[in-house]
Length: 401
Image (cartoon, rainbow, N blue to C red; front, side, top):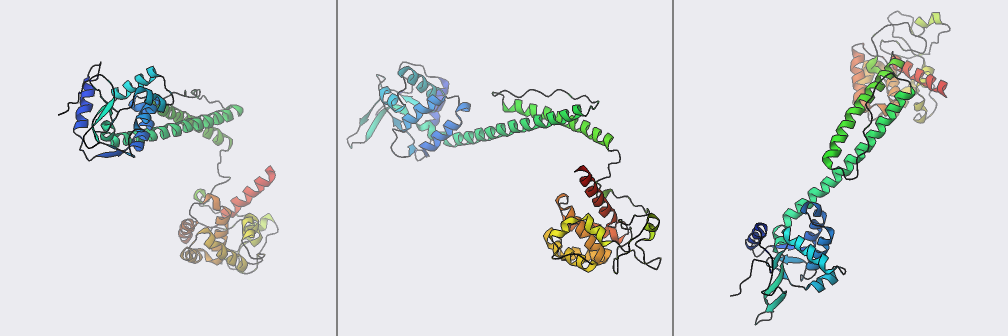
């Protein structure tokens, strides 16, 4: 019976090496592993394993002597140092020995040394290898799953490292821009200095701590900017939406719509002066629903021109245009009927057209229209203030240009 020595030739057996050998001996004989998958996992996780890229190159040279693509339990390769050096792209002998020792210390290969320390194989009567002295690769089979998980964790850490660095860069840029704006505007605020950029060797923990600090600093800068904006625009209602509309009953100008339900049928009535503006949209009966000025709606919502089949000359044309726009906005027929029931056809059409004008800032036009319909049924909404707000925004934009 052949005896395989567990102690290396001319060296000491450590407890770690003994554990690796015992684990390899307990591995089921039918277990196999893809040699190139294992090598790829070791290459990806080499920093956690504590092996250098040159040691991975030596392991690659060892695996090149394995027949086929799979490593079997008890697989032993026995190339000489000169052959290994040649397959490791001419690595110097001292460097080769150092990296072989590193692979053994990290428990990736086991030394199976002959009595004289040489590597060779002895064949049996049937011509197959009966005994081999060299490097046993069973630890690679035993640790294949572990190495794969380790490589996946390293890939995730590298991804998190990259994403955290990107986050830090963006946070520093945003903070610098906000602070620059505050300084240029002469704001009397004090913001902590921006921390320096992290070093190239910073760990993930260090980067996450820095990102947290920068996030707190950005919150401070944003708060200071919000205070500055509020001081420059105390009313804050120039670009208000319907959620900020107060329930009031002022005397409307001719371009405004009253709070009551809009029912604009018949000819448009235009006021000639400010004194007539209070009754500009009313019918002959005091309780008759007021009428609105169609040209005012068209002036406030120029986006409608892109959707109308022809010129909008009447309220019927506006209703048809709104019905054409409705599907594109994602407003269901039920939502449209609900709006017509609570605001009338013309009122619903005006509301849909104002939604079209502000489509980029409304996440769900259908749900939004239902909400407005519900408010209109209780007398808490009319599209008039929205039309006024849109007109003011257009006038302000034209003055700026």
